[in-house]
Length: 265
View 1 (cartoon, rainbow, N blue to C red):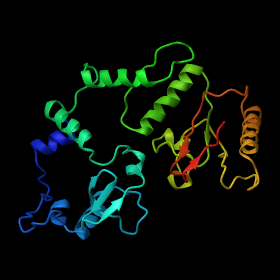
View 2: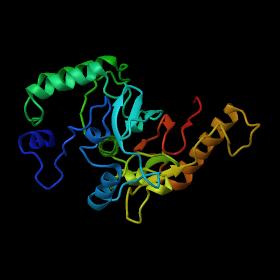
View 3: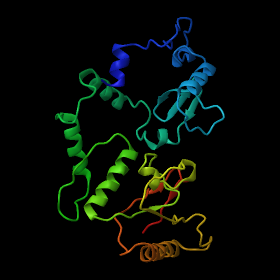
View 4: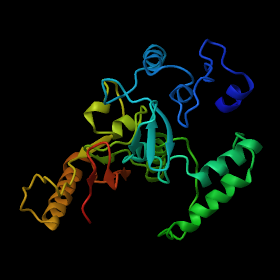
């Protein structure tokens, strides 16, 4: 049973039921937005009951709702969301069309096992494939839905190794690809690394930055690309037994690593 269904059928009984907000008659009610708890109480409860969570604030914002490109905190203050969630909300927060579809589907079926067929994921897979370019080998694309980017990257690495029969993976420094046991090895941002074995067989190369390139401010894009491709060739020759790898993984624009866009080529 999903979390949504459990909360709907069995309201919480551990002492955190929403408090009455009958005294609040404003359009935006901070008491209602935080289930009747004050900001300090929410932060205190979070610190006590949540696992350690990454935050860039001494005291994180208490975000209570979103509307398209805007977020609102517990006091009703509006913020322009320049990150799109964490680059996961590409159509805006609570987009009315998306909200309506979610509500309609939740009223019919929230979750079932993929061992059964359902029209929505089936038709969605078809639509995605129809938008993809033709494969070079002429075969048809297949879609496999997962729960997160970390899970997608884990699966991609496993499939690449199985298909090629090779082990090495080449990634870029400053790249972020997840925090699971496998993807933490692909990730090369020190803040997200822990002192545990992770991601065996992953080689990290320097990022071909155009802005603040290691070749200096006068280097052209062509010089930067050529330098890093030569570095890749040298790395393959010196660090791989036959110069072959299972896969190369990189973000088209690095996000966590500093919003670095790779140069053409």
